[in-house]
Length: 320
Image (cartoon, rainbow, N blue to C red; front, side):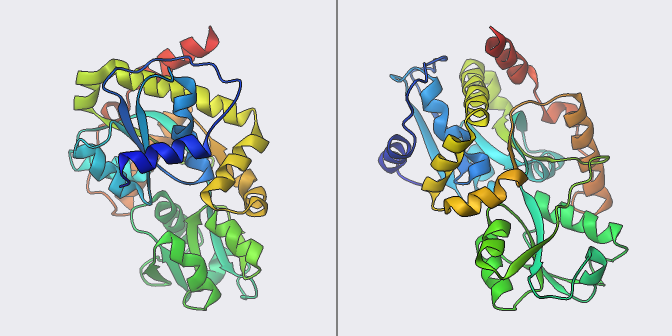
């Protein structure tokens, strides 16, 4: 976690927009929001642009959703990004977490060595695949292997490797494949040693859902207005970036990913905020699949995990 001054300077330097009129206010107590420094999770860095500029908001960058959730439960964040898989796992253990908006969809890819004799997922039999346990990419990888008739625990070797080390492991031959989120798949393609084997989405079941914004029941109880203001800013930031793709990618490049890599990745990334009926069906399907795969022991109360009142209110404000 970064010190307040460093985080504030980061926000001011990286994300200064013109023409954005403040459209929400936040309490004098301010807010702290966690997210990743990736193109598909960029929106919180823009929240300030859609709030009263005299109010305080601190955006803190993390490298994984687990650390964000831990900071949230410790009371160090008001709102943070999370993968849906992690949120469902947390809720299944009785943790008091609540998803209040979507964050991004898509963003996953199954990558193999460019010259490997692997044409379809069936050809992964006997291969070593890098993954991060409990993530959406892990779940989609297991789904892909099972649909190919492969036993994930007998027919392949799953090797735990952090996302930012996967492409190097593939380049060095330490693994034959990896399943990860952008920009790492596109980075492997750009550098010439990786090839996209599959985008592991199943529209009829889980769909493209990926990550959302997470808070706690206690935070909602004590600071509902603050959470509403943050969600409304999230909606406006998302819509603004979706209507200005070049600006989105330009600002995302400030995180250190080269523009040409983002151009490769852009069709596999989708900024999001809404949670509709189809989304809820897919989230419930995801939870059921996680139980079948042994990732969770019981399916949590999915209605309690989501509080749709915040996006519903933000939608009304957006339509004004």
